[in-house]
Image (cartoon, rainbow, N blue to C red; front, side, top):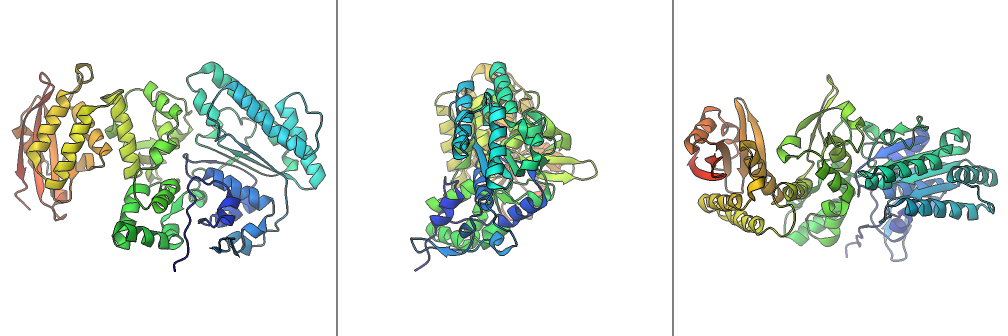
Length: 536
């Protein structure tokens, strides 16, 4: 009988994972490097990427709980392997650990934050016998650190998880934002002055700490968010997936009635593609990956659970965003330093939130290329953009009818009914949302088909220009050109003249060229023509 494989879906406690027999992908090589080579760190990663588990693991390390890292058998009889750090010279001394976790709050007000800070401090005051708390959080925190060091004889470890949760939910509310900044600045102000009493400081969040003004006194914090050596500190690499999680791919493949190779390829297509440094090591989303293993189904898991309402609200306040404008955009390195609440530039918020990732890096110009990481994010983000661009609220019957027509097209490759469905869809767009030019039409079409999970590329480059859309199905490839107030014949001619189909001829699937004419007066398709690629 195969050993039981338990997946830590929603479990962020290192102790619970190890004693409960759940799978833990060993991150202790990087943890050991971090705790032996430095002291104060900051790490930015998207939500649901394991930051809380990382803090919990660090807590267990500094509490000297070596037994959790050694090989042992759980009460259920599950064998837990020895982790890397247990094989090192780490001394396993028990340090006092002070941990703040701001990730679990659902009511983001000044009053709630004040209570949460006060409650956390009171727990440590009770632990160290402090009976007369100081009048403000800064002095209370300082006294706890000094007393913990005095009583234990060992310097203190401070862990701050999701420090920016309240900041993100205060954006757009200047009074709340100012209050949150003041509370955090006061609370953490002692950290730099108490350096001699601190063994280790680790702070996590989504947004870059230097832009929040909270840690302005902590200019000694090392930001490892884009450091190649730590790019895999959160998330799962391809090597970890195919080694430590190899049995789980096989189990999932059997459930899906597929080969190992087919299931691995689909996991990669759906959940891989994140890069957190210019080294471009592929990182999988761990939340979605473990859910797929646990539920036996490869589906969309991350987007709904990891999208803070503050991010969506912020995007709504920015200039309209087209999916075609952000997928593959060049971004100078200093763009990562733009404040999270800068409404003029969506790139920082989209990158820090996990909707965009690093796709390439030009060392000579210190410039990054950002793009959507994988199919799961492409579908979810495209669906959100569609809600803003076309269907602001409510149930959209046009969208659902178009979805059914597209699925039928994927099965049959019958083009005329699909084009007719596009016409019906555009006819249903409200007048005031459809008074734009050519780019608007194919951006909407691209966004919606992306939300449906289509294998589609917009503005695909060739030697002589860019094809508007390239849509691929299992049975064929469709090179599509849209002409605004032109003719379908002109659109087909442009495909031929600029050789948009040439790069696809080695694919093996039949190629169809599609020319579509849009009328500014009719605000819809007026004619279309198609022809097979004659040079196949």
